[in-house]
Image (cartoon, rainbow, N blue to C red; front, side, top):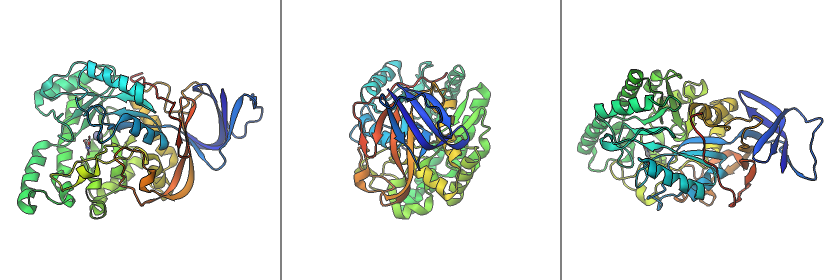
Length: 441
Ligand code: DOR
Ligand code: ZN
């Protein structure tokens, strides 16, 4: 079956142009600039989609999600979160290892791949977690995720000898970067003790960026860069939140990810949104947020991901000590980022670069992330339209979003997954399953 999408405004590889695209089976057959003149196209055996007024982009690749399965499925699960992803124009996800049991052995990794194959409505990959006590096995099939700061789950590695070993192991696999969570735990512990003295046992969430502060980020990120330089490992620092850390990136050996929440919000939003926007590393000052936006726009920050980290609202009660850290975002990341395009924060070409092309390049994802003949047909059609996000729109299992009540300027109209129309205007084709991503190519 062939499908023609025509009259679209295509955004791909640094350009924006009116054009058409032909899907044949699960792959892109042609990308046509302008109006197709001589179409080798039999309308009796083909679908034809008139995309007048819509943008056609490669499907989003979200390289940082927590879908919580196995073990934490009261918060989220692969079926719910991947459906939310699909509705948001996200066609591939890379899922983090802090589940229960944590993904720290080849056997557990294989089990998760089997879960993904059965449940995931989008294409999937799983990180290999680095275990405490330095027990990690050498592993080449997926990138390593290293928690150099403690967060949700118990996966902290911070002894210098262990860290050196992990970076050496990462260096032995030049096809993939190691991805790190960088926050200095001794600094955070010290600040938390001080905060409790000042503000009581469970300080209000406004103090979260004071406890998990810029200094904690900079110390840990600097150490990660030193280890990368010492060992030769490629390093991708996850969720960069501060202006100071930007100077550490060289976009060759050391690259940086920024997350949608850290681009949308700043510390002024704690008063309105409370613990809903509590996450680690913390959302910091307006100055930091604006520096992140500029660095994204000019390419110093290479990729945008969500750190989609759902918790139940009941788990978000309390303050800095008690409330869980993390928020759902995967369903609305593309429309939120398109909103920033409309505001003039970045160009739509750069959005596609940071959310599709660069993730594919960085992790060597085979045949995805670009609109190219022969590549898998992972596509999204988006249209400008004002709408207000209501609870009933949310497909994530946790059932809330920090964006509830916000007016958004874009809508995801259709999502194609491996050539199949898997999402269309609120409806998901539940017969469609994702494919395993091939990384490191
Ligand atoms: O806010 C966060 N939530 N940061 C993390 O590092 C982990 C994540 C989670 O899994 O909840
Ligand atoms: Zn995360």
